[in-house]
Amino acid sequence: MSLDTQPVINVADIALDSLSHGDRFAVQTGEIALQLGLSTLGCMLHVVPPGKTAFPFHRHHGCDEMFVILSGAGEYRIGEARIPVRAGDCLGAPAGGDAHQIINTGGEVLRYLGLSNVPPADLVEYPDSGKIGVGVGAKGVHPENATFKKRGLLTPAEYWDGED
Image (tube, rainbow, N blue to C red; front, side, top):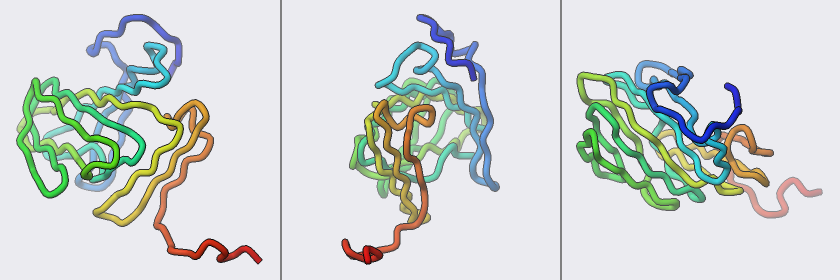
């Protein structure tokens, strides 16, 4: 991906990268914010095939997220709720709020924008799998800027454990 910036990008012209895992997860994503020269606001296009979801059920502790459904229909899994969504809907996922996930339950491709702040640190919980993710970076937690980014299972430890 080229990081050449430009002042205007049309969503139809965004280059897409594919990501998939198993039978449940499939998405094409296109970077928008970095191409516009933005460093503290993130924005990506997500294109999800019918019957799939882009990402695992998760919640951020340092990052607010907002999603704008451009086309298609699906379901917003947030906390214990499952809310139908369609083109024109705006979805909120505040930092420290309920875990969330967008699932394409419709018969056509689901296209949406994901917007977020890009904080210097974020911790992400994945309730379905019990793992956590941590990202830190002086210029933000975006993959291009993070200086530390790890994901795994947390093993409880006392403060002095391993400090002989």
